[in-house]
Image (tube, rainbow over the protein chains, first blue to last red):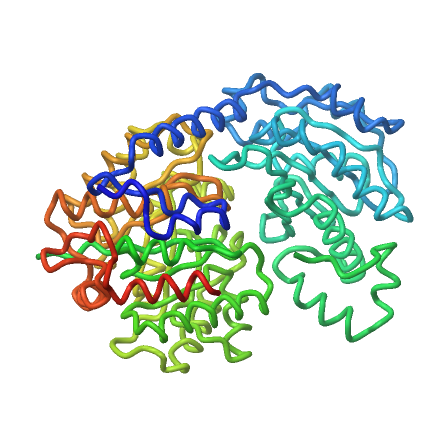
Length: 260
Length: 304
């Protein structure tokens, strides 16, 4: 019937699967096969083992620590979110408590593909955008969930937890990183509404450099207001930054208003 | 002839999904945008954008930007055209706290939306989403099973006389619903419990890529729900939500299930589809738009 829609030209302007055409009411066979291939790739991104050493070597930062959560294998990790939120006893014992402004944690999450591709580069941008912060040693956690950052930041004695984590892969992008910022994180007490999140960080989504700028801006605001979460909204920050004028200069080396 | 409505689901950005969906006959439940941020100005712009399309083409539907309720409150205070206030809700006070809400803020938002007087019929200005496992994932389930917690969320929803409520059934992941079979079971449970509580219950028939499920499972659940009288389902281009990274049901799926079970769009929306020349008199989406009003819509979208 109509294997090409009259608006097929739209497809070039959006990543969404628009103008797929129809065979009767169904998809043309070629479109269905494309979907199935994409699904298989996304499943692979979830299942593929994470190579933390490779990230550490790409990051090349002295003092970087490799950590394990309580998850024993990938299946155990996927089925039990709690085991990915706490450090193994050995890893916990390897952390020395200090007094830091922020702890940067890199975790595989649900896409080792994403962290493999962008973890080290994004970490570099974040660290160089906020050079005046007193950073705890960077940690790389295997089979970690977002809340692993709470455990690590507290164990290290850091005021802010920043977690770079592989987002659950989609059909169109299996390499998106999420950034989570949490002020004064407390393991098993901190709720998700107390975090700020920057999502879909990847070359085809929110560019790494833009994401790092937005984070720098949020970090500065979080430190000033001593909170993160739903009470710390980006629009409030914009208004505040513009109103105060000098706020941007004090934004710990953020050269311009981050944003999309 | 029973209706089966479709929420036309699209994401923020330069996105042609809205036209794609309308030309496939979707959008009668709501045209709903998932924003990428909770930035009030962005949300207000998105609302104005859909409102303009809806008015220009006189589409008998409503729109919603699925931001946090506190963002909607601020957008309304700044005069944004809010038809429906969206919020995810859960079945315990602690779980709702983890979403950053309580009953008082939902009431405040409902009152604010009613005060805009945008509706032409009824006083249903809320849109809620739920899903089994939400309370458990926030460790806010008090040892209670996830289906009971889910049903408690429907009680929260019912209190605010919503226009739409849907479970996003397979969104949360395999730790709560392991595979296609469990997602299908939960979808039917949610539909049943929602209907029992008298809600306008829809289901986002969906799964994530870390669950052991595929599109064939969704075809099965969609068909079962339509047989069971589900109020509305989702329509996402090609079933692929490119921003939230999960798979739902497509505009094609909606066409299939309406045709297979002799279900129709909402009557006023169906009349609009026929007027636009998108649908023919026997309620089939036409293979070509030649000579129809819809070509003007297409032309307009191509220029903006």
